[in-house]
Length: 204
Image 1 (cartoon, rainbow, N blue to C red):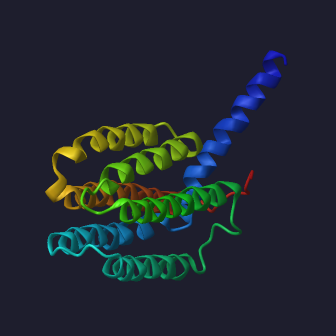
Image 2: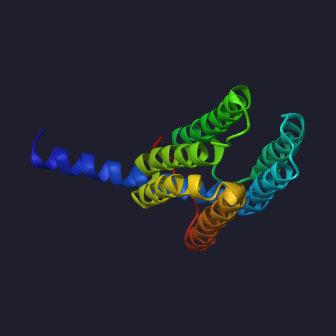
């Protein structure tokens, strides 16, 4: 590969990364993330309350998170209806895959925690590790800033064992801050991009 071909390849990579950010903004993910920051934080804090009330069977937790996830999924389709970014891109498919896998991982961890006994709740620490993994994948797709979020959640995972009585409240507060902050940035990017120009053709 000569210098000109290398420059063209780097330019293509730059445009793909830029498009990933633009797609995320134009697909209304900012508003979705801000809304889900409230619902997810409510779910984590509700989990903490159920735990403090000595609920040690999965039924109440399944009901709580079933409602949260059903609302989240329904709101995604409602808020993305009629968006201007067009058909689902490669980047968006990867984001769906990352977070669907994350949800599946959380369900598996919760089930394992119950099967092994709920006398010691290890799920909050493992949840932070799963968050860190998901954000690390986001970093590979959408920019290095997400790696810093991944490192933050990895560090928090080490703190969780020392605050077992407030672990889910802490997780809810941190997740609210990260998800609402990221959603606000995406929402502002969407408004700026729509005000600047019409969406351009996709690369992927």
